[in-house]
Image 1: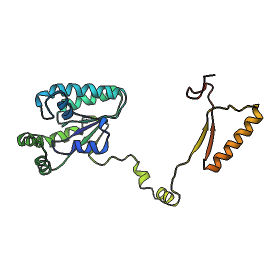
Image 2 (image 1 turned 60 degrees about the horizontal axis):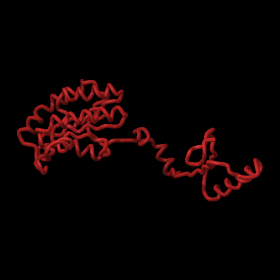
Image 3 (image 1 turned 90 degrees about the vertical axis):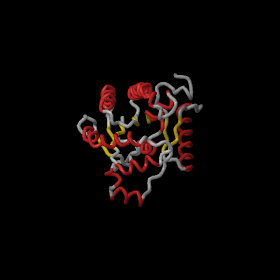
Image 4 (image 1 turned 135 degrees about the vertical axis):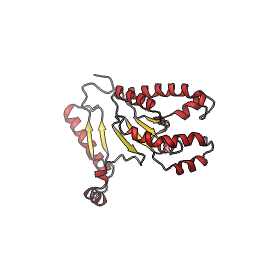
Length: 225
């Protein structure tokens, strides 16, 4: 689970949408719109967060990647999410959005529905203390918002791997799987038929030939025995 932590207009929702599928993101704003009159319906917050906790619990129980997109400034709410992650046995990472206050205010002014100036100012004042507290709350990692890498850095920077890929680019290879042996004539005829299929497959560009090794036939092909 990833918990996004940062003041309003610091780019949390934009970052989440850029790096994760929509179904992985649990957003308090979207849930507020779902159970209330819109994303800015503060009166619906209690119901929205109750629903958020339920969704998070159910996703973690299925061991699904879950990105919690809220302000993340409330220590008690962060603790609740961390405890849910620990109960599920899933790692929990805090992602911090440490933008200059001036940049947050400028972004907020460009929003269709800006956060009230006094509310954003209060969030920005509290941010240094929140950022410091997050470091000691026991997450598996605390990382700044950055592009998500799915390839280990060692592989990306490996000169040998880069040279090998340039000289011999990795491509697709194809294998042919034979799921049944309905060849009349017994073993000799079957061997001849398999040899012919293998030669035809090789000439067509296949790299490998696989034969079924199941004691029970798979149901898409035939009866179990």
